[in-house]
Length: 329
Image (cartoon, rainbow, N blue to C red; front, top):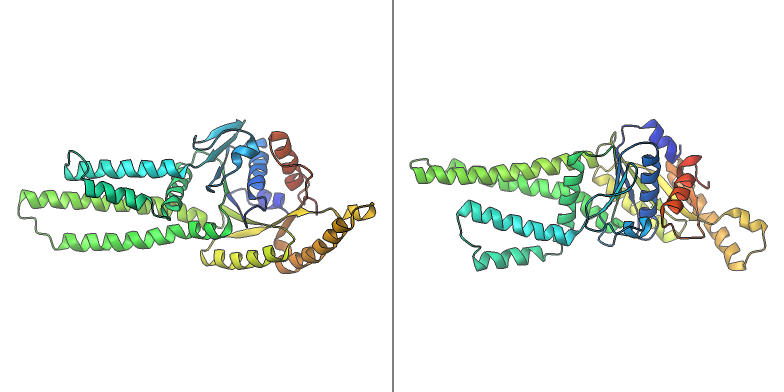
């Protein structure tokens, strides 16, 4: 099996994720995969959910916070601006309070609460998650390529659907219990019930969006998750741990791609001792990778002599990853 074979044999897989430790090549692999799919005539969106996103650097375009930006025919890229999303949250909450309770302006104590809640550490992840829901539910593209945050944050991101769903279930149940105890004996009471219905409707709307996104992320027919690894001991240990945790969230792991493999052909040339030692060290870890992941290893990408920036470099990497199906391996 190879990366190309995974796509050829599973044409219904439309949601593609590359994950792994930070700095291993997730973003470049995401960009190259998006380029390859777009070159075949598919409408593709590659988007980053990493606050330290580098799609702008790779495509050499200013795309941060600008929504989907067209890179070339059939290919769009997007970097989500979490801060802007949080500001939109705040304004949406203010408008709903004004509409629901008939205030002329937001009371100071409520405004302070809105500001304090928006400063919570988890708010950024929540804002990003909600933006991803918007992107995925819209269904405007043939393929969606996720450039995920590093593993630790990715686990939090992937758990958001379950966390939100459980919370909304509890709140909805409480709301329904409150309504059961209300007596509709006057117009005032009827107005109160209308307000409660509006709140319940909002909760059901949120749950529907989250459920739609959650189903996609855990759908083995539509979703493929690839771990990016390099032949180093600690990376292998961390990847094994992460794979187990991802399995707990029912994320379908489709395979592993090995990056930054120093070509063994260099051993036939006159090279510095440190480079020879590095190749020999990688040989040991590459064998460990093969024994550990077996047929789940889908490709090997060599250590490149230049950074992957600009469309020519992205095209070159796409050719390595997909043209012959096995990369450098």
